[in-house]
Length: 125
Image (cartoon, rainbow, N blue to C red):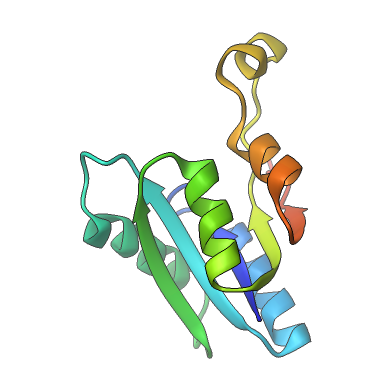
């Protein structure tokens, strides 16, 4: 089993840290994932995940960076299934009600469709 932390960018250190704390508590692997549009490369997405790990953790053990391309919610859900994730850690974006109605929310789609427990990390603003 594993913990999947989906990061928006390399500055998503709070998401990585929460995922790492869960992974350490349950003695599981942490997979840090970033999803980019299909016009990018998987290496670019993995580099963002790697940078988030580097910025968040001093000496990580049992942590893997993962990049993916495409629509974020389905890619996150697929990765959670592939890695048998017990938790999915996300940092939800704040949206207006109209924005949610028109565009949907990655966090909302993951929450409604995940087979794992979803953990939201609040913004510290």
